[in-house]
Image 1 (cartoon, chains in turn brown, yellow):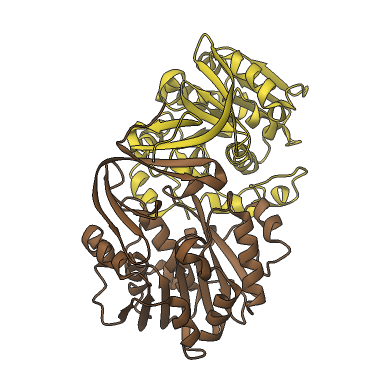
Image 2: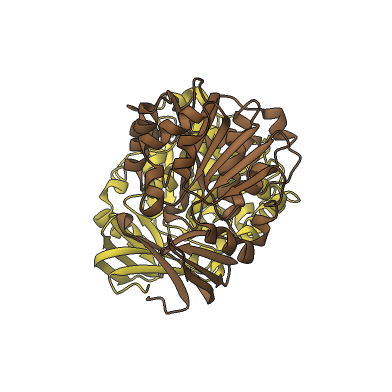
Length: 291
Length: 291
């Protein structure tokens, strides 16, 4: 069958696949200085944010992505006090990070202020912590910010970016990883969304290689469902400065002082389990592919 | 954008979502006595089998489903010798089951012989074990077969069925589960594909309740990616007769005498980790929701 105009469709060229959501109407559209931002009212997934034709998030399932971009990395670090989020303009990752009482300061650097303003209007639940005194929102170039960050001034860097095309492309580069490595303290963790394990093996391989070249001897990926992204299966890759990525503050995770819908200590352990084909995929480039 | 005729699209009404694959052409179509079977040549997912408009499997990603419908249940049982597969006409699950040397006999009961014949032609790799002397393929009513199976004559029942609409509907019923319970020996395991954890919570709740009512005190779900199914995130639910579902033959799984692309012992453990919302979903009905 062919879908009529009551659907928003995102084709994924490199996979020959497409994902569609039925919509009631478009709630918003604008061309920001950087990209085209749209918001749709869907019939079953709540509000939907689309940037340059690519689905960014829906009200219904963004909890999967935001929880898995934040909690595993935060609980993998002994004392994550100073956090930077590159991208993340919808503020969902920021909200999750700020749930951690150990965190003293979070700087979110997204080049496009309009994403945050649109999110405040159509995804207010994701922005409910934006006024937290520990949070600082900057709307400048994230790479430049990272290059100028004082050495060893961060415990955690979360790269919550778009795909490696358009404005997000430079965030998938050895130069950027090197800046992150410099800005991280010993034991600090970089975590980046790393696309679909099934569809984007080439991107993952390159990321492992580039992170390694930038000084991160230890890299490890975690896997989670994300229905609105191509293949419905997504990954995040952690890279750690000077220490392996193994173990986590399990007791703290079990006694977390906030609600989660997906994350828990069992899911933490489970997410790091690598499919057999993945070990082969990154085998030549990876330091920490499993236990 | 709207997709043109070079795509096969499956809308999922209850989710207001749709998944599409770009196709080169339709390779086959027929109306069997039970359902409409089509096969497409896709640009990136190999061959695609569609029944009554619903995607059954693709060459590219069926390994996820078939490995996870078989290996976790088989390695969870101490000595799975006698296996029945209800449905499963494409023979992919059968092939995985027959990789286990402990298995002495597998009976596959699919009501529609045409599915197997079409699979032999367009998915020959899935049918490569059909001539194994341990395999018996029957094309009759699976429920009736199960009701007539001798008591305690099976160690494992795998329900590899379509969704709970159409011919597959009766396989999601207390009466069928009761027949399985009778046919299973003590410690025997029933495993059934149980839809999307995100989209089909109602089906999962009902399944837990009905399995419990049929005598299965212990139920537990496992989760895995399945890109061509709605939401890209799927589940299988195990129910065990008289014993909890915990632990597995880990050493055997680690030393498995066959290749897998997804399954390994880490994935086995990981797959059973339940998202926080899932424990709430089945909390009132589940005996074994996690550790």
